[in-house]
Length: 302
Image (tube, one colour):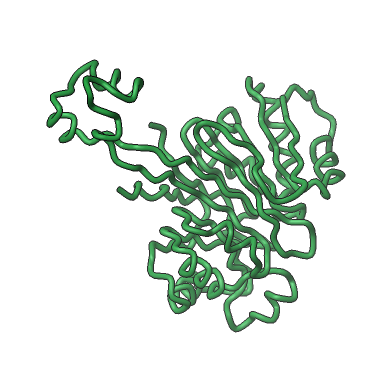
């Protein structure tokens, strides 16, 4: 199986710093490589991270503020330049169609890309495949904003000891799993439930129902924590979360691995974000994102 992991391209908020590029995140999920919120400099960050444009299968934009979308122009042109042979689906808020179009055709270039625009008109399922369901939930920000969640359907795992107990081996294992029964033994007799994995992406927003819906029971949650708790009034005014609020969401929703990102340049010590998330009650795995970091999706719960 292809590794399931998050590749962090950039972790700054509105203003990049010497050490933090504008936003950009890649989720590798089996055959899918999804680019989230490409801000300025995304092309270069992809190069540094070792992610080629030819790997991209899908782009998800939460909203059309520049630090989350200005990199689209370069990415679209790179997809054409590299002659990516497959279609690339683009999800983005429908209310930002004019910005999408401007970025899609920001300059003159030989456009050969197969971009499939899929504007998000409201919360709900965006795509359902055999491998995952992609959903969107509306968030609370000064411009139309959606968060995204990818959920794998539940399945079943084979239990070798039960196969052995029933004397089923070799090609008979495949026959049993395909047919559901073999010589009086059912597939349920030799398998156990395997919960599907889930990933959620929550950017610029105040606390709202959509945040909790996206994070609920999530294996890997990437969430903005622009401000520290001492600046909660600023966070509310500008439509953002604090590290403490992100930690509270993760704790209440049973998140397994929390990734904090989108940090204001006003703060100097990343450890302060982790401390506030912990103080809010989150006890799971916690990562304060850094540019070019790779974060694996947690191993399955068995």
